[in-house]
Image (tube, helix red, strand yellow):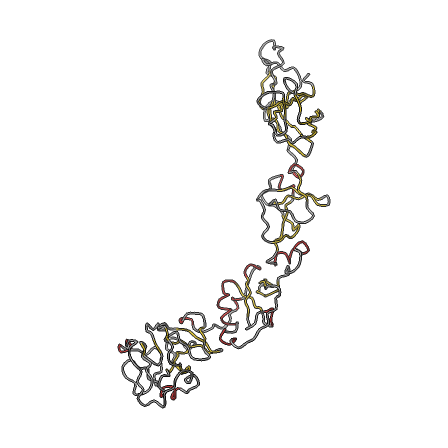
Length: 445
């Protein structure tokens, strides 16, 4: 195809040839030309070239050229013959008479693909005769392709996209079609009605559900959005996945999450409105006695967030060396010292192993503790791993060989709490005044 670098003021002059009336000369388009791409060096005439009026039937004037035959158009002063190359005929397709252009139009000198209904043609300028409209694609592909099976094949719903096929949209008497997203352009050009055929079509302005593309039995199909005008929470998994208004929410088996399983089994637990802001964090939630771990902080209707420990209980610590000592005492202190304990202040919890363990005959391999809060319950766990070494002689009776483990807690609000280490418990009320050395529960020996 040829891109024409020229400009035209119809009825005044041309930079594309195409003079009308009189004898065709240098730079004129002879009506006997058989190919729109026939050009020669003389086709570089400037816009100042004036069309000859010799032999004209009459002075057509504005508005009188559109219905003329090719011969009458050529013979009428001011009118311009519009030839186009068959858009579906290949590179060497002949030109045909497409219509008669009115005088006074200013046209860009760029080849343009146009269509009139199902007929396609390539024009040497941007002006198109009555009934023709720009087809919206380049001159190298100025012909809709015959639909191909691969345009509509799919593996899942995300492969498919919908497009309007009629002059009016699907809400107003038209029809929705669907094609594979990689071929949506070709399918639209081939199957949708060209805009030029819809100029006189009057459409109602009714609203309805938008269309969505679905993959059914390996072929794209068009459906209406199943979530349109409905609460997302009422949708099934299938409809929620299809809807552009809603988002499916999946939960994970808590056992798999707690065990750090390589593959997690997800289950559909509800449907939420699209656009809700959520944080990316594992969240334990309950509904009717069922516990599930969600990958986000957003929960579907009916679900209640729970402390994560409700889903994943802390696993008991084990000693790699030595043996776990029984923990029989703990003390609560204000971190950094002092006896005045106010809400929100950091708290230090010290855990002691049971027994008088000699410092000269005891080796501590590990010591740690952890604390979790669930409402008014503060749970302390710990592990102290000790080994009796014998020391090679008498053991000192200092009872300091077991040491202690320390963990910290902060952010408790004013109120009553129960702090527990196994069966050892302590009631705490914030604010409070602590004894010197801390408030303790249990006995070390």
